[in-house]
Every structure is written in structure tokens, then in C-alpha cells.
Image (cartoon, rainbow, N blue to C red; front, side, top):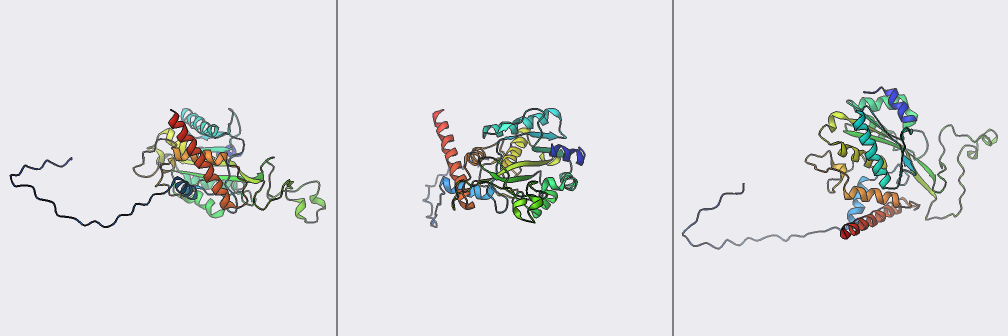
Length: 320
């Protein structure tokens, strides 16, 4: 297992019954059986998508759904070089499929994947060694202290932690203050005014319905418990990591009603790779404009984008 400080440093840069014997007696009419009324309730695709999004999406408190803005650089530690490279390549490929730019060799990882035989101990050690890397102190940048405690203590085969940032949608300029912020041109003369410490974002078209501030993921830490993933293929592990790294996924999501790579640790699951649900979710998230000021409307916009991704997939299948 790699040392805690080394991991922190890397983080920073699925009888037929027998035949009856013949009888000479004439066959008897079976007794009539009274059946109760049965009601079959179907759900439309948009209802299914809405429920799926509601179940798996976990934006930070008070914020909209976050995603990566430009590209990802995947780093893997404590695995054999060939396995590590496979995971790097696979996660990077999934990222490229949704429009992100994969990192080049030697890039500074912003998706750090660490394998260990004691994931809780490693999580606690990493948080202890670099607490600011997990909770930077800015509003809406993480899931909060209770979630961080869960990250360190919950027994999960794969656990993850993400930090995101509210930014200007066009420029990518940070739109929240973090501890230590101070504009050197004004803070010394601001007499405590927030103007000396908070980022200033020019607003070009004020609206009560739309916003130019969106949330971007900029760091993901993933810890793999090797004992718990021993029965999976490298593809299953890599695709699960891709799903939870490229989107904000609820660790406690109940996705049993859907075909999803998120079910790979459920007993009897035979999900071999990312499914149509997973790909449509990621495609929908990365095509959505995310400019709705109302968070519920923002989720609905992502749902609509996922529905369009489903429609494109069906159209592609029908053409083949």
C-alpha cells in the first residue's frame, strides 16, 4: 500500500417435471378458479428517467449538478502497471465519449484512484494529512462534514469524494470565496467589506429564471478496496469508477430497478460494463446547459437531455 502522504501528494499535483402417466379415465374439466382483478401499471420513459435521476444524482447542498468543464487527468496508484494503465485508459475513454479532453502522459491527476487493502484507514489518513484538499471551505464545494465522515468510515468496495466549484459558465472564473481569499488591490483598504474578499463576476443579463453560474467538478478521489473487488473484471471496476468520477453519484443510491453499472456489487448482478442507462445519464449531463436558476428545473433539464440521448441511441440502433 502506498504511503498516505504519497497518495496525498499525488492527489494534489450481474427439472422439467416428469411426464404424467396416461389414464384410461376420461379427462375431467378443471374446477373454475376465481382470480382477483390485476392492475398492471406501466411507467413511461420520462417517468423512469426522472426517477433514475432523482435516485442517483447528488449535487452539493444548495447547488446544481456539477460536471467536469474541460478535461480530466486520471492517476492510479498501488496497482500493477498494466492494470493501472488499463483503468487510466478506460476512464479517459469514457470521459472523451462525453466530450472531455483526456489528460496526456505526465499530467497532474485531478482524478486520483488509489488501491488498498484497508480503504477506511487510507481514507482517514488522506483526510488527516490534507484536510483542505477534501473541504476547502467554500460554499457549495463539497457534500459536507457528515458525508466526509461517511467517506472515511463506511464499508464500501469503492468509495469516492469530489470537490466542485461554482464558476462563471462562460469564463470558468471561480464564483465563490474560499478562506484566504483577498484581492490585493482592495482587501487592505476594504475595512472588512466583502468586496475585498469575494470574486466579482460581471452579470450581462440579469434574470430570475436563469443563471450564468454553474458548478464544475475539479477533483475526485477514488479508493478501491482490493479484497472487495476481487470477483470483478478490470472493465467492471474501471466503468464503475468512470461513472462515479464523471458525475455526482449518491453512494447510497438504490438502482436495483435499472440496468446500471452501479449495481455491480449487488448479489447476482451480471452487469459487465456501462449500460445504456449509464451512458444516457452521462451524455445527458454533459449536454445540458445547466442554466436554470431553480434547482428542480435544473434536474428536469438534465432529465430532458437524457431522454434525447436515449432517442439518439434508439435511432442509431434502428439504423444498424
